Picture: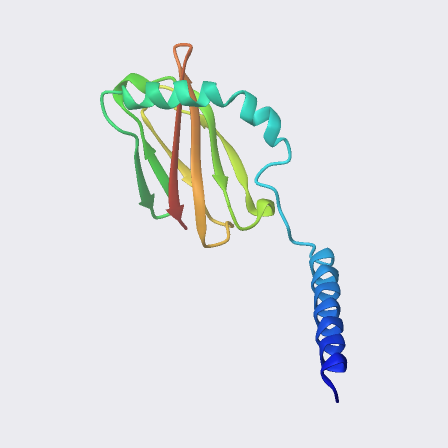
Length: 143
């Protein structure tokens, strides 16, 4: 085999490898966006920044503790009567995301049940309001 055939064989092998890689990339079905409406969420992210600043000004931090039947959220005293949402965001699979209402009423704590949730890493996102003032907290947890 002379050097011309070796160059042609090397070039064809490279092209075949590239075609194969493109084909394999096109066959992947498990590519997820973080969120489907990421552009709209990006436009209102300034609100999230303000809510995070409000959370930092609270008299004490929100405590996240593991309880026997779920996760216990303990809020500061000034959060009585708060309402909002608690979202368990699973970075590896959006089908496992769960969102639940947060209603503190007269107390300052709530237990969020985690039974039925798949074990693994979640990002706990708490978005709540007290007296027309918004708060937001994100924390990584493992269930």
